Image (cartoon, rainbow, N blue to C red; front, side, top):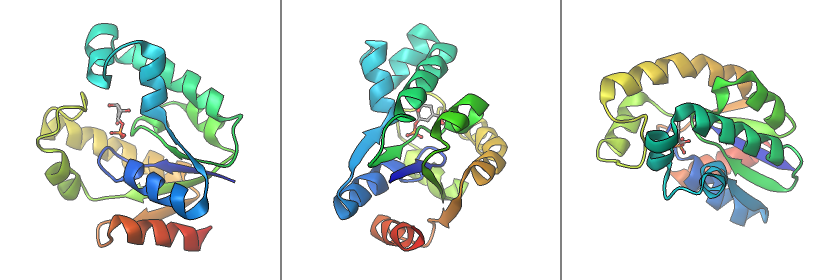
Length: 162
Ligand code: S3P
């Protein structure tokens, strides 16, 4: 079984992936971590500032292709994974869950975050959020609205939908 978590930055993908991995006894793959290892940089912001977003997106697609060959894992994707059709093709073999979180909640969570180069200011992030919502919905097999749930409740909800 392969479970793919998609959703905007700050929707809880990493935390939910960790909880699920324990519950289901599966491995976890944090896509950003694999991208970082390939990049040779110290953090995601450094990839964006020194190599550019295009380079980051290329690495993201290489990692998505590698993941297409794996099984028995929970994959926590980066929020921009839906921007390329090719990524979607590589991840299609898993069950894809969209963790849908309102922008107001995400903004509260990420207001002081310094690790996400695409969440520097609220207005730009809001536009990105709006353009991606349909893509997440279309790509996902199932959507879980997270606003009224704790991360444990989101994980339980997902298990019940499997
Ligand atoms: C991005 C989301 C980030 C990371 C990078 C780009 C995006 O991952 O991949 O900063 O385009 O939304 P998270 O969604 O895990 O924050």
